[in-house]
Amino acid sequence: MESNSLFNKLSSRLEELSNLPKLDEEVSISKLVEEKGFSRREFMTWAGAMTSMLMLPASFTPLVAKAAELADRLPLVWLHMAECTGCSESLLRTATPSIDSLIFDYISLEYHETLMAAAGWQAEENLEHAIEKYKGRYILMVEGGIPHGQSDYFLTIGAHGKTGEQSAKDASQNAAAIFAIGTCSSFGGVQAAAPNPTNATALSNVTNRPVINVPGCPPSESNIVGTLFHFILYGTLPALDVYNRPKWAYGLRIHDACERRGRFDAGEFVEEFGDEGAKNGFCLYKVGCKGPYTFNNCSKQKFNQGTSWPIQAGHGCMGCSEPDFWDKMGIVHEPLGDRLYHTTFGGLGADATADKIGVGILTVTAIGIAAHAAISLVKKPKE
Image 1 (cartoon, rainbow, N blue to C red):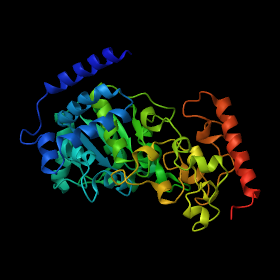
Image 2 (image 1 turned 120 degrees about the vertical axis):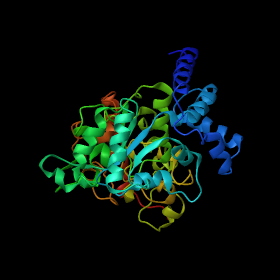
Image 3 (image 1 turned 90 degrees about the horizontal axis):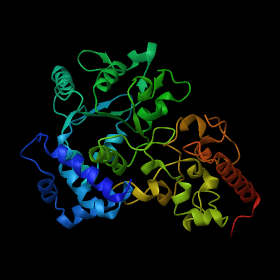
Image 4 (image 1 turned 135 degrees about the vertical axis):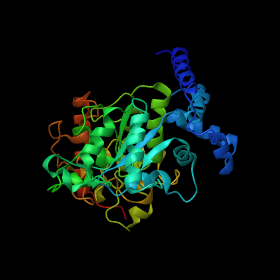
């Protein structure tokens, strides 16, 4: 789509949203940003970064800023299933609020079990009321794997003792859009790891509605907010890869954008944690980094307000945004090497491609990585 045509389309979408009532007349994002000590310049800088992340031209920055102002028009229901609440903490538990986290304060969060004041019967009524009042209009975000089928009783929620599976089904039925936040709700997560005693599964397996997966353990706050903003801007679901992940966030491998990629290509590896290679920022592949097999934008968005990410901090990627990584990525601190693991791609793992396109080319890449790793295993470590 031509840039002008897309600009006009998104402008029309935002105009429609602006006609919807504000859910709280006392609050505005401009006021909230000012109260938290951010300047208008900093807000627009954030909007520019969000525009870039969503792969839109820089000229669309004013539209993204306007989308932030309209973010409270779409009610949001956030459900917790079997999880550690790490995804919520990724967004909210910052020492200093970021604009991403302020956006989450600003949106109309109608139900969130760990943030709302209500409890017991009142909490249940709030959820039922929100689902009915905003039927067909609310956004549903679900965190956590879901005990499923005859094991669904392993997770019951609220005063009614409703199972998590039933709660997710009911909330999904009339949602305008559904997002699985984190690897647990996207793919089952650690709850679904063998032997999976609760029969935990992904949100997409308990509802017949389309589910957009935003995996990660946890996903970055930018990916959570960016997913929300894409829906606000477009009113439609984003382009997805074969695992229903937004391509704008999960289109590249960790390995492709890694700051230590040059070290990999040069054959400079950390042999063990704490050695000279580790001190000099060498590649972490030989101490278990799964970056060559994992799709995510961690190196760009980072965590904790963009200050760092695991590889920058000296630990390899664990592959947490890939399906069943607990079972299929092997031992955390050992390289996969040429130990290809079972996947729907027939054993080449995520490295086969996120789209099943160019399998042949990427097979060569996979073999290249394996060969490179094999050579490095016998290569004398640098003094």
